[in-house]
Length: 84
Image (cartoon, rainbow, N blue to C red; front, side, top):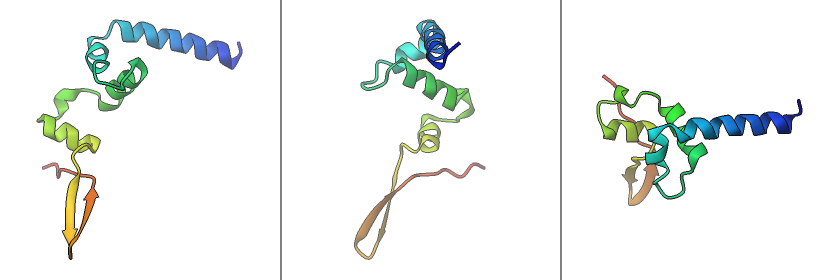
């Protein structure tokens, strides 16, 4: 089996899994997110219930930047929450 056939077979399997996952349907409603990216997000995040709040999930994912200011200069930095 060539790599092209393997890739096609895996792409077909991913497409079938994506069709039956309600989370994929919700995520693909976000502009710019297709089935493959939605599946990647689901795999990377895992069980969303492990986050106490949406804010914790967003901070974990790096979607809530902090602004650091010193001597008139501002800098954006990735946010992080300290887990107790």
